[in-house]
Image (tube, rainbow, N blue to C red):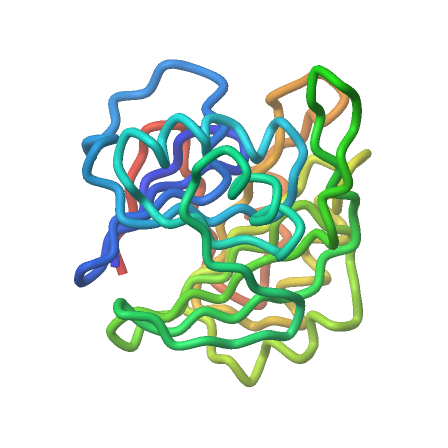
Length: 222
């Protein structure tokens, strides 16, 4: 599996037949390793603008299927986007592998010109392709539910560290101790002043797994 960090919480992932983006909000210019029109799937952890991002435009340009909670899928379906709806705790087998939707402690409202639309429950994803497992936590605070992920044998965990809206470095390190991934990658930091954090502090404190710090545009293969 190959992943590319696109900034904030946005990642591209490629494995087998899967060419997907997770939370396609890209705050800066990065040299992408993929073609927008070749995407097969888009994963959305929740409805906030810095995660929903360019999902509609990307889905329409590529024909990609959006995987998200039921409420987001209902909203996007009204805009002509193909969706596969899931909810917290659900696991499903798809043509590329297996997807499980995990809990997250956050919000999920969708901002529209008419006002805020209900976006269902926020979540995260465990995505398994060809025996490799990626966990994207979405926006979340620390939760004891993360202990349940240890049995999943996660290869790579993408964890927010920016604080204020999500876990900070201290709580993200506690999350790593619960999840026990082979590799932890920090995300959702330094995009805005209110979520400033030092990923090197996270790396220095992580004694439960390896840490890989990815700048926007960097790739990692496992």
